[in-house]
Image (cartoon, rainbow, N blue to C red; front, side, top):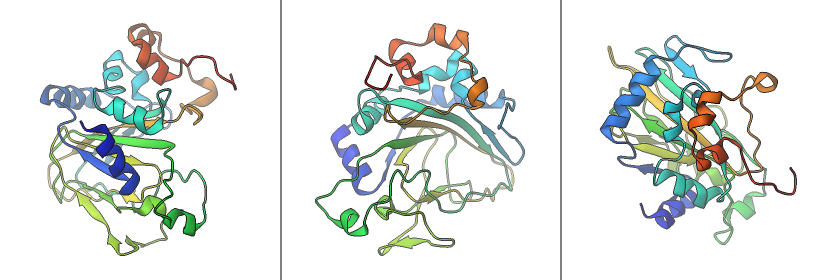
Length: 248
């Protein structure tokens, strides 16, 4: 992976599609692992299955925190001491409805004239990587993104589908591809209009070290000892085992 070029796309467009981020065997492993999940705390299942903090369920998920290529890109974007703020598994069944266009987190509101200045580069604080586990066509819940909208400095209004002449793009891709995007990007889901196919996906959310890790159920949170026992030093850092710093 050409990390500088990919990083440039995250700054310019707010997102980048990474082909073949997962091998076929990894796609198969994750499909099976999602099939075995059951809801905990704020998880839910139905037409849409949503499972939070899956890294704490089984050591199997650890490898997907720092995949080669992906972790180098995350560290280039967010710093060598970045960590995860979530790892979430999804499955959308036929009839599931996608989320409208939204942003995940607006770190701060800045003057529009500053964001429009070509010499100003908005620093990244949070990025998400979505690993697709199925071939995504127009009927199977494709993700929608609005290029450059991370520079809008606001969330989209209800029904808003364009920004500064840019229209929403639909991401069509293959099983094993990954989409990385920054938290300010306007993006959304779409409906599963297929009669008999599910879309499965794994998300990993990365943040700079000073972005708090908020693992639900919060005050009752406990790390799984079996997961920690098998985590590598880098994976333990991603889980929050940092070196001492000014605010520790």
